[in-house]
Amino acid sequence: MIWLAFIMVLASGPTWAGEARPLADDPVAEARLKHLAVELRCLVCQNQTLADSNAPLAEDLRREVREMIAKDMSDKEIIDFLVARYGDFVLYRPPLKATTSLLWVGPFVLLAIGATALVVSLRRRATKVTDVPVTDEEHRRVEQLLSEGGKRS
Amino acid sequence: MNRFLLPLSIFVVVVGFLGIGLTLNPREIPSPLIGKAAPDFSQPQLYNQEQVFSPTDMKGKVWLLNFWASWCSGCKTEHPVLMELARSGEVPIYGMDYKDRREEALTWLQRWGNPYPIVGVDDAGRVGINYGVYGVPETYVIDKQGMIRYKQIGPLDTDTVAKKIIPLVKQLESQ
Image 1 (cartoon, rainbow over the protein chains, first blue to last red):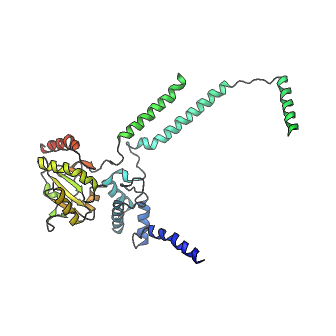
Image 2: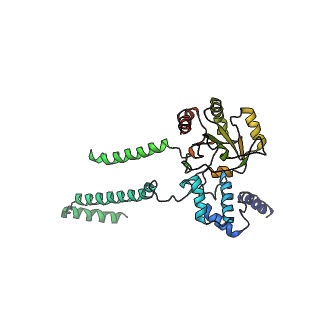
Image 3: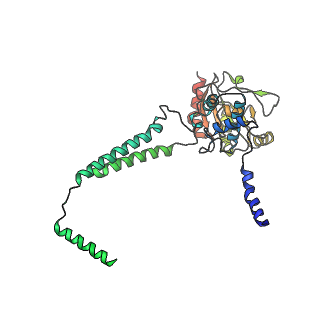
């Protein structure tokens, strides 16, 4: 029992260490920071959000966002502040623009091409299939094979 | 023949896209600040701590602003290039010591040489955020009107200096 408790303490130790320390004392501000930080990309480790990243720049940017929240700036103002400095790349959801149109429309274009190809190939296959009537001789052979199989099992 | 034409053309298109992708560097994010006024700041200087360094002092000059730190290995790589450029006298390079310790920065400059007439101190990284810095070294070319004209992400090399920085500086000087 003591051993079990010991193992539990050992196992849970690292999770305490890995937990992010509270970012602000105010829970409302904290919730806003979380909600914003998952929408924003860390520029150093590009596949992490600002909320996930431990890079020093991400920490600085979280501090900056927290200060803007304290100044009572709206979400849009905060996001505009970051986009003005780091560009659209800082957003996890890229805006629909001329430069991002391929990104937004591309998958649907591919889907349309795929669907067309599927329909075309199904139609083509339908025309190739011709009905071949089964002769009486073949019928008898099938019946015979089936009855043999039944006996064997 | 017809049977292979379609897969082949798809293959060629995909290879084309991947080929273009290989030539792009995902770490180089185009800066939205190019063509815009360089963000203002007023930071203490590294050597004369009582004095401030501000881009408003630089109006009427074409200059480079180089974000660096003693802890940054790319800055060490870039350093001989900056020394060479400073020696050539083509364009002044002003430094911004980004999130660094003062003693370490001073030791670094003493050891490797100081290409900067003035070094500002950005210990909290706020100037860096205003300039959209996300990794040192980064270098900005700023024109006489205080406009950012070029941003180098990562270390400068002799090739970039000769082919991009110096021609751009000459062009901006003549304006």
